[in-house]
Amino acid sequence: MKEIFKQFKEIGIIPVVVMEDAQYAEKLADVLCDNGLPCAEVTFRTAAAAEVISRMVKHRPELLVGAGTVLTTQEVDLAIEAGAKFIVSPGLNPEVVRYCQSKDMPVAPGTQTPSEMEQALGLGLDFVKFFPAEPAGGLKMIKAVAAPYGQLVFMPTGGITPENVRAYLADEKILACGGSWMVKQQMMADGDWDGITKLVREAATIVKEVRGRGKQAVNSLYRKNKSDYLQKRKLKIS
Image (cartoon, rainbow, N blue to C red):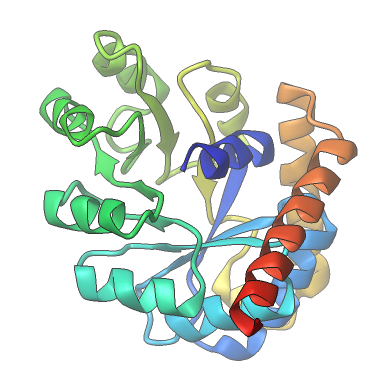
């Protein structure tokens, strides 16, 4: 779990993907891997989510692919079967969290209030999602509410944009930010892959500017994720 979240910190911005049609999965995986954001949180808001995860994982094993908007243990099972490497939920459901923990699956439930943060700590978590970030008060709210909980770090999602993401990334309480502006479904449907590529590169550049992450760090993630995948595949075959 800690290794996955260490990668979150290095990547900085986690693309949140809503995809109705899985035919775009491989192309998007290529764009993310080749342009500095080797990660995707594929949301279970569509019937295609599990297939999208599976196709991305098989096409680019080095891509860190997880499942978002996971509300039930059944969806956890679907995500695991598809090859997801982490789970994200919009709220904190103790049943889902404990189920993920029983499966050794990294999980980041959504929180917003001190009560939810204390509940997360009680479940043994030190990394949570903050959702919806901007409507709930943004970075100021995170700083105010999280002050008593020094061990917690956050992934704000909801209303994160190129205009405000720098301030989030510069704060020590923020492990990573979730954002969808660079992977809009309509752009995929329109075939605007040049536009998506440009937005992904710009997002990766923001992370580099704020956190000083270079190409070497991203490449090390590629190598490690691909090596882990190939080793697991070898063990499964043997």
